[in-house]
Length: 218
Image (cartoon, rainbow, N blue to C red; front, top):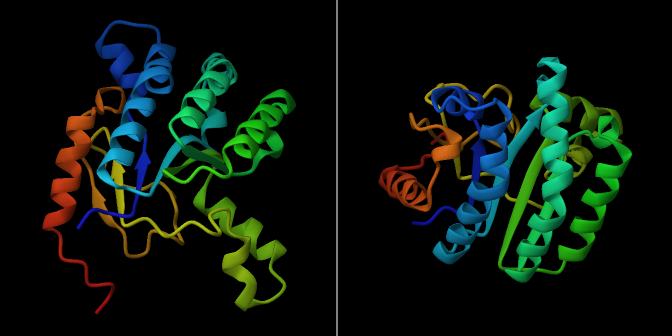
C-alpha cells in the first residue's frame, strides 16, 4: 500500500557540499531549487497525498551566522518561484513551526504562498520551519483549554499523521521531528544525502514501506 503521508528529515546538505568541494550553502541551494520540486511532482504522480519536509529546526539557529543567514536568503529567493511552480501543479503548500522568529518579509511571503495554494488538492506539501517537536508540544499545551483540545493546537492539525518518516544521511534518530505525530510511523534511514534524493530513490523508499507490516501497537 502506498503511504498517505511521507515526512522527510532533510539531512546531509552540508556533508554533500563538502564532498563536492563546494561552499556549504550549495547543498541547501540544490535541495531548495531542484530536489524538492522533483520529489513533490513524483510523489503526487505516485498518489501520495501529503509530504512534509523539515527545512530548519529550532536548534539550527546555533549554527554559524553566515550559514543561517544564507539559508534564510535561499528561502526568501526561492519561495516565490517554488510557490508559483507548486500552484501550477495543483500543490497545496503549508508551513509549520514557530514563525515568530522568522524575518517579517519572509513571513509575509509564506503567508502569501499558503493563501494562494490553499484550495489546491493534488498533494499537500508542508515545510517545517523553525520547528522542533518539543517546542510544538509546549506551544500546544499553552494554547489548549483542556486535554481534549490538545491535538487541535498542534501545528499539524488537519494533516494526517505520517505513515513513513525518512531521514536521509544515515543518522538513525529523529531529533525531535513530529514527536507526537510519529508514534506509529515506519522509519527509514537511507545512507544517501538529501541533495542526492531522487524520484528513483523515493520509489525505492516506497517499495521498502510496502514490505512493512504495521501493527500500531497491537
